[in-house]
Length: 319
Image 1 (cartoon, rainbow, N blue to C red):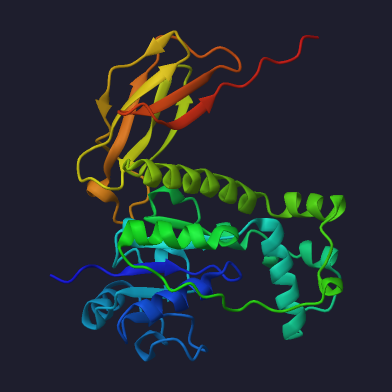
Image 2 (spheres, helix red, strand yellow):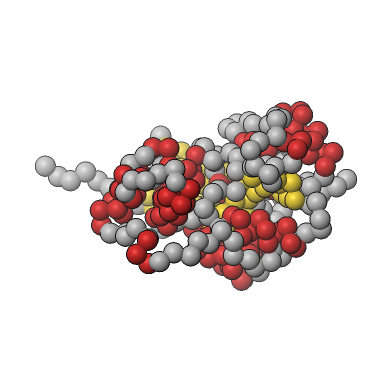
């Protein structure tokens, strides 16, 4: 049976073209299947009519690409490929906004100021929109445009394909053409791109953890957790490099340290996606008492690494 293809959710203006073309040069001819919409010359003829469901799955099985790349939402190929075979590149929302603005000016589709551009809803949170509420931790790889070389090394470590180091779609500008990022514009970005900032912060944490794990020869383990109803802890944990359930424990300061347990409860969310281990990556645990205001509850992997964190809300000010 042929290996399932990788799916690249190519977010515009995130160094995605450089990664896509670097992968295309590292792979055999016709190994890359492009899906950039019916108007793009890159799009495969079989995808111009935007097939979905069984028709899309059948086309992917017929063509057997190594990589599928395009500007589409994460759910587009959920019917054909497991989430661990999906990957993306992201960019800091400040630099992403600058790049979006300059691109629209070059194309002649926007002639206003940078501040006016930042207020336009259609260009806000365009990175986060492609992923919806799906936990990006479960993707097989997340690269960062600002750390392109490290991203290529992580990609090779994860999937065994070494992208050629290319830099594409980099417009050469005079310094005066670039809008200034000052307190006002940064404040506008923080207000209008809150979801993108949250996504980038989480993705940077995952990126750093994966770099550290690769350097230490440890497995790539991701998790999310929450504490609710006072003492109930739940979430998911996944070892990306094993078919076995992740072994984790919950720690609350020096007051509580659970035994190791397997994250193997079925997740009921995100039914459109093919989750690893058939979705049996969830866990739950009960604390002996609620965390104190400001107290941290941690999730640890079996080797002691912190992989999840919850901090109880601080106490309300007196008076």
